[in-house]
Image (cartoon, rainbow, N blue to C red; front, side, top):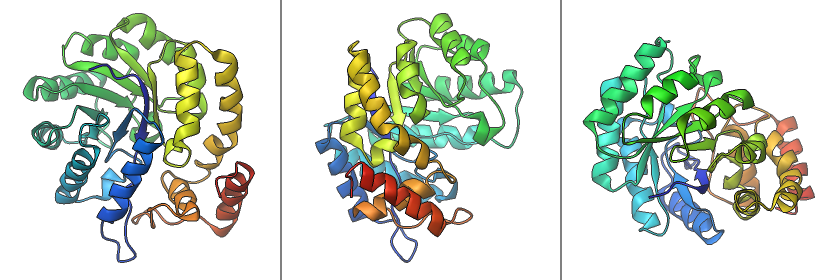
Length: 292
């Protein structure tokens, strides 16, 4: 399966009592599919994987797979700072029917590049499912260096990387060194267009929780080489791509979704709802874009 296009990094909606809003989650997935996205990514950073219990994590993956029902691919977040836990989540994702796994680099432990390599190698050799690496050093404190990524491309089921470094030089190295069959996917919404222009295969997007149709149009225009249209939509989306990171993700995205009447609820502690000032600024952008 080719992983190319727009994949939404789904928020995990919670009810007022703090429990998983399964009905709302299913409705959000239906909304995403109806708006033309190419795939969904449950329990990534945006899905608050760090504060889900193991049982909740697995349940969210199972719900996403059931609701997608083969209409779009499901890339399940399965990363952890524990290799054994990553194996458990990745095996569960495969057994549940996920199309691929998205694996963040181990956080907090601060492994060396050899440790990063051995972590992904161990999971990939243990569980035969397509794996997309995920580098976001602003969250993990450890980058997956391009040389390490190139080493990992030698493992057949490691098929791509989500790059959220904000570093276009790194993206260029990944595209140049890893070959056409390896998918370099944008993980920075404001950089989706330049990353695709450098040879990226698409985006795993937070913003598409809120504006999936518009983001899909931008991504596909860029992939099809219609850069004039892609630029136009990029600049339409740019204020949203910035305002949804005004505070720690996914709090702003959840605020926007709540304003739009989509299921989101509050984030779990230690994340908190956005400030009233931030909420007003988010609302203004949504109004300007006629999303509310």
